[in-house]
Image 1 (cartoon, rainbow, N blue to C red):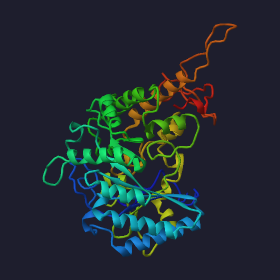
Image 2 (cartoon, helix red, strand yellow):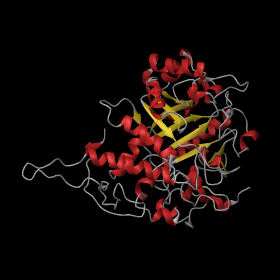
Image 3 (tube, rainbow, N blue to C red):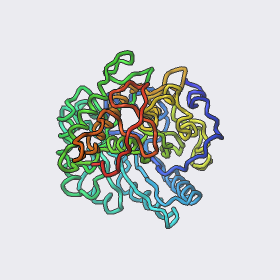
Image 4 (cartoon, one colour):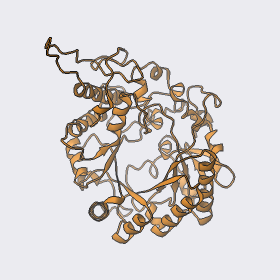
Length: 438
């Protein structure tokens, strides 16, 4: 088992960075799943902590969690928090319990704090009555799917090996057609073996207001499928670039794609709000079914107990969790990254990639992302498209156009490389405008 040193970030002191309060509380209301997806990093991966925990969060855990969330919101005068009802499959807990817990959190936080509640589900258990109950209690519904076709979801089977797609498709259509106001969007893990445009358009057919494209949780010790960590190929970056080129020039915004919008925002010098890109601190914390306070689930893809903090809602506050070395390292920005990342001209946009993807056995999370090449490919491609969209037109006096091969600099005057340069190259280019966003 990995030791405590695995959590640290490039020698960062716990006291050098002021902690940022948690604003996203991921509560495991049910710790089991009705599906047995063959690739699942949570139940088929190296972490085994779920086996010893109760299947559903008991009432005292939910009560204490609501109190701790309210305490944190009051301490830091938070005006908004996100409450994510998670699992496993959270609908196994019953929609009445989800509604009651959400109401309890809203009742206890200060009156000036708005609670944005979402349940993340595989869609197989959605019925009209259940969706109506969640919607009535102000709980939006996010779906986890591998695409919008049966072939995309072939690995998402139940425990008897039966396909989940027919039930998931019915749930997704129900949500889109009868309760669109409660529809939060679709979360999909990138699979470079799929046709990127076909997969994206199949998701569009389910009418999601937003799509979250996530890279599989691989690392240097357990590389993601189809990625040769020693080779030049960038299958995940290529896939994302193809989807971006389908999304970007559309005559209307067919859906929001969070990864694309965050990349564009970061290129423009705006704050980021995703774990996958940028240097902003992660502000999410997890409460397990037994009340344990943990770091985000993605770390469980690295090794057993990787997300553990040793804290729980009965004995500890969320402020105490902020001081945990693993969480403190994720608040340290560039100081927590590998030297090669700190020297990279894409630093402020890439941010070293997702924390879980930096893991290497014996070195913890201090390496560059296993997707380094893919992120470089994707970010430079987006920057090139942004430069084309914001290029200054020719002037009537000279009929000349400015140089077009430079990556636009951020408003913060961060040095950015030319779109065709190597990762070591640096340069500056004209500042772009927020109006360039689609």
